[in-house]
Image (cartoon, rainbow over all chains, first blue to last red; front, top):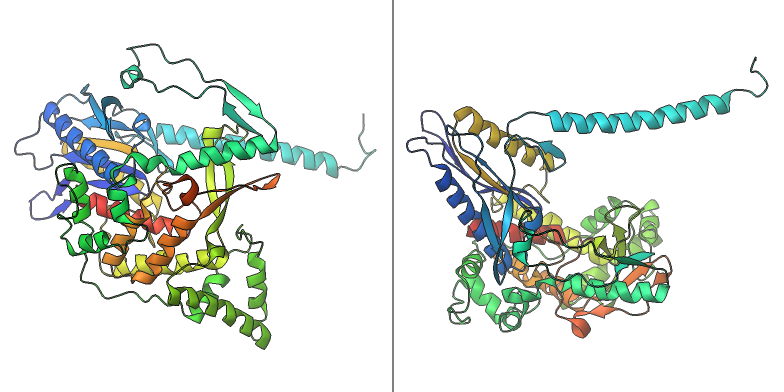
Length: 157
Length: 358
């Protein structure tokens, strides 16, 4: 992925972002002189993904292709692309189709539920449920505490 | 209690994973195992298979496995460090990616890292280690070491601590690990709490305290900091590095998506996980990279030999297993184990080398 400043004087480049074994490889076209077609984007992404798989395999590792997925964003074209990619794994020549997630679909990564469109609904819902679970437990505990701290025989019918 | 499959799952044809192509395979049946002997043998077989996953990879079998050796100091490793390994391997039968990866392991012009652990480092390492940490297959609890720190001004305590420190230095001098260090206890943790499926158990290895302390000092502290100081780790990997957190990487990803959206430019991402990364690391390959960064041979020999000679025992509620599996008996086995102070750094170095090969 290459990122240019608007006047083109600054450039930042990297292939992947990773935290231990959770890796996100990416390709883009930010220069915008000749925008890549969706098919070209998919082809470049396929090449990068397959090369990562092969390099990892050469070092003794293996990708968990069952849980891998791709996200393709066309930029100024139609937002949703249906292009599919399939990868080989190790010495096996048969290909495994890689799940294609929608750009509007949130995915769990690095402790968050991230959505490429930037909405935080999934993360918000997750945190709301988590807070409700904790609140429920506190409620039960408070009820138990109130009951156990009330001296016996002081209730009035 | 564990649950083992009644019949091992048959390999599903890859095409069958297409959701609409074929109906999903029938669910696997499990049976509950309660007998301690049976649990022990099932775990030993499972763990042997788990640590042998890298067998199919190029360095997992002959001839490359034999060339590579165990500790990154073989003749082939020296050739890789010098960048002239071409004559040692059959170029026709090795992939281009493998050669690209080996090219990244070339020696860098960096000052050497000291292999000796200072007494102050040893004491500081013990002091900062939480006492509740489960360690020590030999039965020595971390509390035994910690108790010597309580009265650090006491002459007897200091003498004992210095003896422990001297024992560690002796290992560096001999460049060979103690037999005591080549034994680990494997504790199995449920990935899904309350559902002890055999294939959904995480293996956590418990090592001797002084061995793990040495690994932490040499790899997690010295090697990683040395690499950071000389800008050898890049900006892509955020794991196992000082002052970097998962949220920083998540922010980078969010910014990447935002940038594409605002600038209306195309973006494609491939999100993936490496399968049991710490348990299939080719330690020798990672150790070559450590030497390339300036690590002396002795710590690599200690680490590599300890991994290679390790006798793996399984620990359950019924106690420690009588039997064990090892590289010599059931090998080849790979991986440096989750729980080792050196594993995160080995994976970090290996990842950096792989990313540079892209």
